[in-house]
Length: 438
Image (cartoon, rainbow, N blue to C red; front, side, top):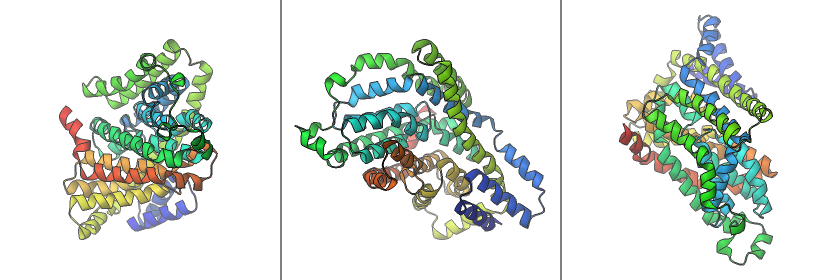
């Protein structure tokens, strides 16, 4: 039954059926064809897919990010980053790297980060004579960190699907997220002078080592911008601190994030209006609807796979190749990178995790480490054609073709692969902090 489900799903995807409908249709069609299970069971399973309490954190964190953006909190994060790294070569690109890390600590969504920050950063980069395709590549590559930095929507999905502690996943993502940003900033520094700027900018530059720095007069004062951003920067501390000390669960933390963002937007920065709030709600509903549809359909898909003994068959096939945990992780990396080329991150996780998780844990791979590897792989998938959602959106914002964006993103994709190898083969990068806090 397993191969039939997977082949039906593949056919539906080739016909460009949306992922949520493809998962549900493939599973229900297979169950109707080869079993006597009443289809009413399928409906019950679909509803059960969105009933777990931890999933409530997803729409709440998405809404918090949207409210933060409309309430002026995003702008203040950009000012802090500009003041801190704007004096470096390619200062705007470096600022995007830092801002994505800070923004990811609140919204947890890479696509939201590309959309929100890209609308501000790309026009500014083009005005300072960055090549549009390079601007698109930077704006696509920087938010890869968002699903790795807590709170992460993808980590919540992984935790629910596999039963892994979401709190442990959140803390495991902090060091890998910082590592990614450091590697990204090094890549920007090495590539910007050669690939980042128009010929006109190169000719005008008196000192190529300072190419793309934000002029001192245009940079916010660091201490002033930091002071103004304190209410924004406190939010990740409140979320992680509350979870660490048992004050609230990750789901309750998401609700607190929404209330906090509303309070700061209305009463502190006073930039959030009722009209902007309605816009934030409408924008959030579109993303939430897409994710929850996939999660609902994934429940019947996972149940059908389990009924068809697919995880057991996958385990036998993998064990016939290797029983070495490191080799298995390398295989998982390859599978996930290929999957990320064609399927959106949360959908790919839901499709693959129920198959890989039992095999990996049976070989002694830590479920938290496995979660970080899976989430990081699928995050890098935001850059990989042909589906690469992050790159596609950034190219649209920069008004360049997807082919131009793909050529420009090459160095960042190479950096992403090196990063994946580091966190795969050095588990302590992910496990050091949660073990310290345990």
